[in-house]
Image 1 (cartoon, rainbow, N blue to C red):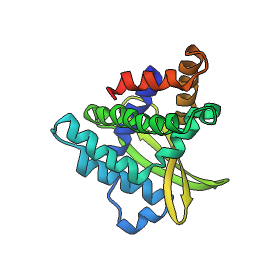
Image 2 (image 1 turned 135 degrees about the vertical axis):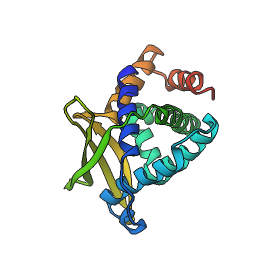
Image 3 (image 1 turned 90 degrees about the horizontal axis):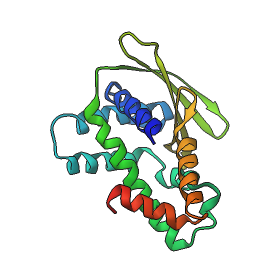
Image 4 (image 1 turned 90 degrees about the vertical axis):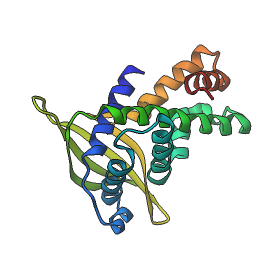
Length: 197
């Protein structure tokens, strides 16, 4: 969990430094990443109650990320073992978990510089490559995997220095389920406790 939160901090810093782009560019994977950053700067910076920051972040998350697809992926093979009721509750708690974890990190911005480097097709997704520059450190590489469905690009994974956040989260969730006797209910209880849901 500590490694995941460190990655989230890096991503939060990256989003702060994305430049403003015309709305039409959000129709492309690269434009989506850049426009999300612009919205994050305008909507999530400054002093505000935690609940307000989380609400604003949830709106950005819903518009830019395929949260359901990411949630299903992170549950892995256990998705098909869960009942429909468990699947619905899990997805609701998963989104709440992501919102709370990400939104809290926006207060930790420390002046890193962000630059989109390139974008290229990678099978069914487009890989938007970027770098984060921090004084006194080597640039950190952050890749955004974006899938376009019905003309609408959505982020489905973020890869920090070669480590997929979705794969990392899936591994952590699987460990929780295994400690709970292989039952998704154990993960759902853990997410309820974590999110106050």
